[in-house]
Length: 331
Image 1 (tube, helix red, strand yellow):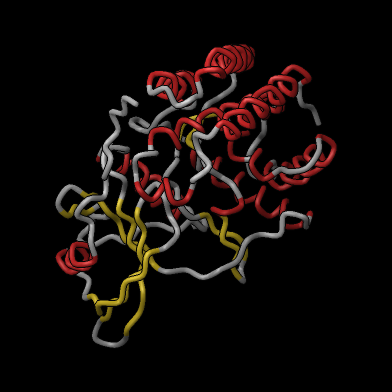
Image 2: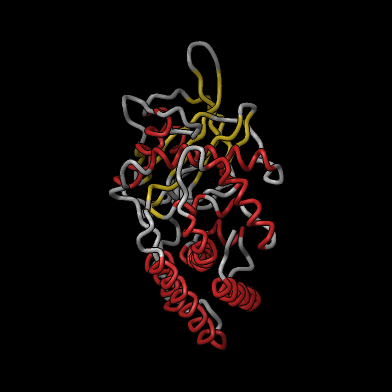
């Protein structure tokens, strides 16, 4: 295979570098360090202390080469802007007015450790509560655009990862033509949906608003991990809350929008983008795995990736999505 991706992006990121990195920017570490579950970045729970107590923080070391410094700073600024409006998002800690630090080739940030649980999305009241919070966030995020963060589109999130997959011969030879034909049809259908909604507003988004990035605390939900913040249609931050058949998802979306529209008007034409956005995520996810495949952590976590069965199932999902996009989605 002809991978151009770096095979060992985290080479040299050992415990000493991690602890020294925090010490060098103003934390006093105890030596306690525990890796947390993360594949794209490397995330650690780290013991620190001050004059009064010992406590724990969470340090995120960003994957080298994925985001520019400007993109990371813009993500942090977006988070701070939301906090200034008293919105519950987990923001990085600032030291001397800085939230993005560097140790060797690694950029990193540090967060307060927060406890919580997953939201119960089967509860209508929870769906409306999350909808209200996203509506409040969007009311702030719509005030200005991102300058450096990406915009959701079929080229960057669809065709680029597909080219990587094809050029590196990851799809078995006997499936390659079928795969190419399917993704071409899927992406053309997504393009058509975007074209039909080209006058819909694109705003700053959380980007990856799935239940795993919502931390439910005693006083309600907080959003964590704005690593995938992008420009795009508002519905991108809503559709990942939905599950089940079409009727169930339509009912859930109505509950979410009951809360959302208390703070932000929703353009109902964007409902037609739900299945195209889901399809784009499915295509992009395969490319994400492909581009990270030489990272040893990915081979351990996703041993099934690249198998004949994986690609057959992946193509089956794309076929299903093409049908769903052609049927359309309505509430």
